[in-house]
Amino acid sequence: MRTVERELGTVQAENRALKRDAADLKTEVRRLRDDPAAVEHIARDQLGMVRKSEVVFQFPKSREGSL
Image (cartoon, rainbow, N blue to C red; front, side, top):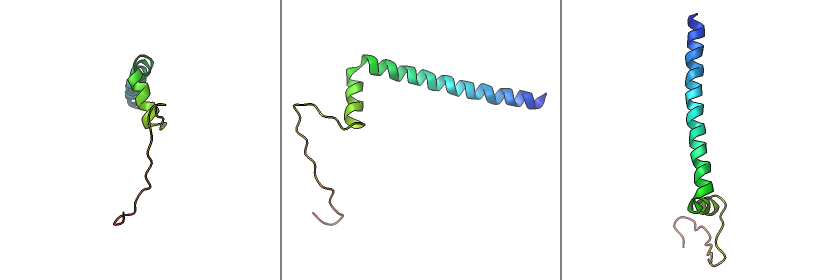
């Protein structure tokens, strides 16, 4: 009986964690659907995208101590 109660406690804790994760994901989906700034943030930071009107400058990484 105690083993089953421990398992139940573990499963309930996992369920709470999964519900929190699901709620976080729903919030993220809602934000991405409704907030153009959120979509732009991901496009820029994760995908490296820029607007057509922007100019991108790329500089080689310098080794420490030399320029």
